[in-house]
Length: 206
Image 1 (spheres, one colour):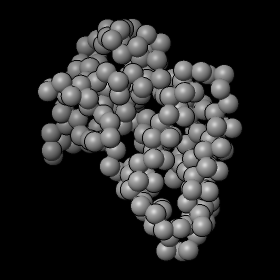
Image 2 (cartoon, rainbow, N blue to C red):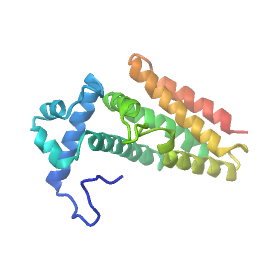
Image 3 (spheres, helix red, strand yellow):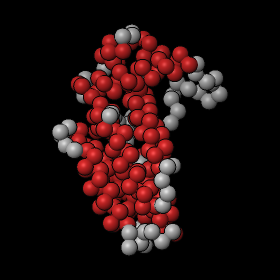
Image 4 (cartoon, rainbow, N blue to C red):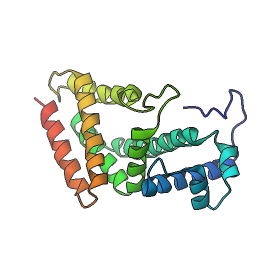
């Protein structure tokens, strides 16, 4: 997604600008995870980052834009980790298992990000008052999972099933896993991920 502060044709940001934006996003994640969405004001985030509120306003049009940048960066980091892991395996079954396990392994070290995402998803609204994120913004994830499932079906590893139904179900199961772990940090996330991988492998195979 493109920031509203980035008109088409604007020159690329400098290394310093990117570093500052990353710093602000990191502080936003920690503040949201600690005090929740409603209490995570720009002033509070600025204090955590050791900068003035004006610095945040220079880089982001407002809180909503900053929240969108948090989501974008968290998903990008997770995707980069998972894709790197998936490139090391072959076969649809191993790709499926790696997708689940690599996501859990990455987010296991990023609990604040999980908590921040939950707060943003539950609270951020559009100008019309509708949820900014949800099923309607998950199409890219669904399509990627569908492609993996079709790969397995063409290779004969997976049985015939509706790939959209399976993609939506797996995505929801992953979200629930992380949501449960955020609420109960003592929960064994890795064990949960292994059970989930086993469950979907059995569901997909002949």
